[in-house]
Image 1 (tube, helix red, strand yellow):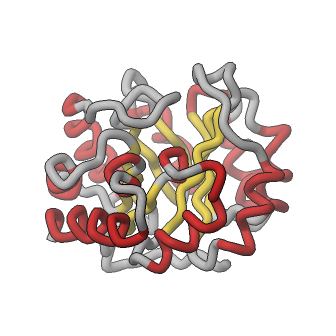
Image 2 (cartoon, rainbow, N blue to C red):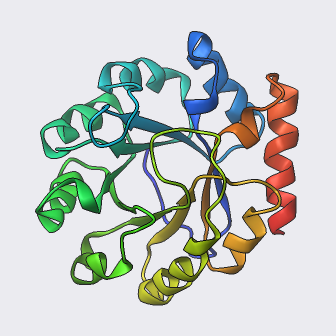
Length: 227
């Protein structure tokens, strides 16, 4: 689906299906959408760039008919370039790659956009925001990792809050989302929102409880905490 930038910067909540029931992924995607999420976040891990293996483009393609909102694909893989076309064809709306995963970030971002997708850049906790300074005009979203990537259920790294503020200042009035991923809860979300974040990935905080009703309550709690 077409992804339009929201100039009002209203908060986008993107539950990560990494914390969903993998035996029922289609149902889980439909449930979080019905319960008020804005985007569906898909964590792709290769067991090489990060110490975990999750899903590939075939699963993304299988989920696309179940996803009526934005399919937000976060590629924690290296190299990423050989797989970008496959994820675009599978139905990704946003493709986020890691600045640390390849030598030619500017070229990779241009390629993502040429495939008809929005282009995101993720920054690991130890990576400075300066790496995106010279390619901001190719970026649609900056993802500040608030945990070390690879596993769900980790605790929020408060050390990343100043980085969020600096990235927000770099973005200025450009139509670029600022997203965080990792340890998002009703307690940590307001801190990130105050730092200028307008998209939040939440996994275990959304899927805890295991029923659609719980998902709706959990999404609402994060949104309310940031209001």
